[in-house]
Image 1 (cartoon, helix red, strand yellow):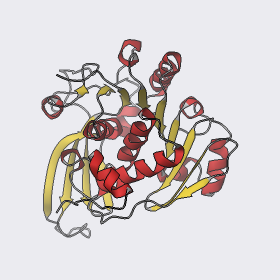
Image 2 (cartoon, rainbow, N blue to C red; image 1 turned 30 degrees about the vertical axis):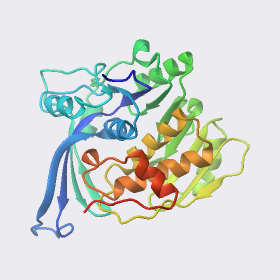
Image 3 (cartoon, rainbow, N blue to C red; image 1 turned 90 degrees about the horizontal axis):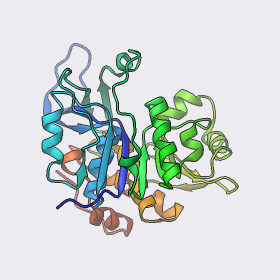
Image 4 (cartoon, rainbow, N blue to C red; image 1 turned 120 degrees about the horizontal axis):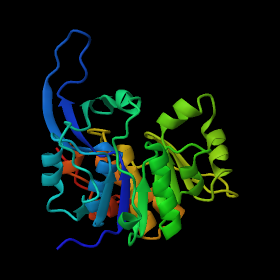
Length: 307
């Protein structure tokens, strides 16, 4: 019997086609051999859901409309897991949202039609509903769906459910009211180009009482709260097989930490360990981090990396 959901997730849920190359990216007009390829759940929310469930958390997932090509894969993948996908809308008039990712070690090239989808003027995601969030003890909300993402945050605030978000700018409602906001290199490059990490952190901390974490890929992480000195932590070092899903796994780690009342230091360390385990294997949805692996890495005991 499935457990009652502990965490509500709202955001991008897609079908992800991933291709791991054997010998690196080819030069133009050159051939490259595909070593492995998969069609599995993806997106920021889909990946976080997979990781949280693997960590032992019961999840309720909401967000993107699911189309005919994605539906059977998604239902089969989550069928035996502690994941409630009942809030999702399964449409019958469209193939569904998918991406295509070519991967070679620390380098990946994602492709899709998201620019066209977002510029279409049409909504292709659910409107959050209070009954889907009620009873949960934590949430994670992607900021990509405009007023609907804000509505999810407003419902969480109304119900007293703390939430994690990602890449919400300093003037965004989601950042200003989040328990945790994880900032990636992508946001700093696009929104805060020319500003140092310290300057970005100052701007973020001035606009929220929550925990802000600025990640820099394999570089040093900065984190802190309003009125406190910015702290720093080095990420865990592992042999990288694929970075696909690293940031989504970090978000999942923060959500798990929020659910279990971890301190700020513990949260950053736990999320970093989750992400480190994730990048050591491929494909992530089939080999998500397990709690014992994450704790072993934190405690300096190591873990078994995939071949």
